[in-house]
Image (cartoon, rainbow, N blue to C red; front, top):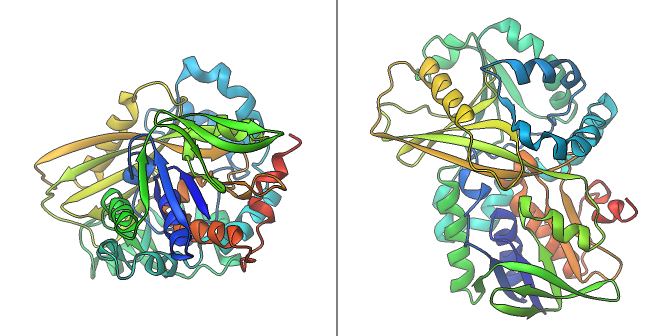
Amino acid sequence: MHILVAGAGIVGVSTAIWLQRAGHDVTIVDREGPASGTSHGNAGVLAAGGVVPVTTPSLFKSAPGMLLRQDSPLFIRWPYFPKLLPFLAKYMAHATNNHVDHYARSMNTLLHDSYDQHMALAKGTPAERFVGDQDYCFGYKTHADYLADSYAWGKRDAQGVEYEVLTGSEYAQEDSAFGTAFETIVRCKNHGRISDPGAYVKALAEHFVEQGGTLEIATINDVDMDGGAITALDTSAGRLAADKIVFALGPWSKQIAHKLGVKVPFESERGYHIELVNPSHMPKNSMMVASGKFVLTPMDGRLRAAGVIEFGGLEAGPSKAPIELLKRQVATLLPDISYDSVVEWMGHRPAPADSLPLIGANDSSAISYSAFGHQHVGLTGGPKTGRIIADLIDGKKPNIDLAPFDPRKYANS
């Protein structure tokens, strides 16, 4: 079949490669090219244990105070707030224990083997060198802070996430980069790291093209419909038709999804990072700094601090406050570090109200498919999502319950 994949982030490129390996003629369509958005700017962690959503029951109590604190990792662009309210109401409605358990069970099936899925995708390609099997750590300033986070660790326990709890001094015997900043560190096993997410996705895309795939740089302006079914993409490069079309447009998916009848409650989460170029010392593993809800990840020639949630839509430029917060936090955590320069970045994460990605056919015709909405774990779940979509298009039944991710659950919304 001739198949169009809309979107050249990790999900879209993974989907294209698995479809290509299944023998199909595949074209990726993207307005800027591979890894131009979130797939470039994420924290680089393969978060196999990322099974706890932001919307836990405690969010009702903590969110108002977080919005008022200067050093809180949650921001809202207030001019955008009236537009955000309908989404926020549905988003907060999922801050229940039952939904956390549903999310954890569902996402565990998608994420638990993330390192193996990345290796299956990248092995034998130039992208393989970026994939590592390092641990993912959580650093707590005090042991009481760790105990206060017991709800989340209990949910990870229930899904079989493997980890060990260390004192800061025990961890420092292997990695002294953080000194005495953390009293307790949780070290998660069977995770991994991508040492340069943007270069990784670009290397995968180059491999796809070298194997005969087509990369079309074009803006998707609209979709052509006939009798409720999609027939083609209307792009700046002209009309593009195919046997199947996969939508992996990340935070830019909402408008097209709604036109296809997938009325998902959806917003953009704006994420930020700073990078210290050529730092004087480098941590060994990725570290979630629990007090600031940001991740420090060693990358090729630079140290990236990524995190912060800001709701402010797709149109406005970056805000200064999240970047300044990250700079203050890094300076406090690593007071003796020196570096050549600082790089600042802002991008968008796709956020459905229930935090669950959409993976599957959009309707019974199975002409178009959705593969977006992974929120904070797009890099982690991208290769497996692409493999699932390729299997569905080939008529194979994936070994995973896709009901929680089915786009058709929104058909009558």
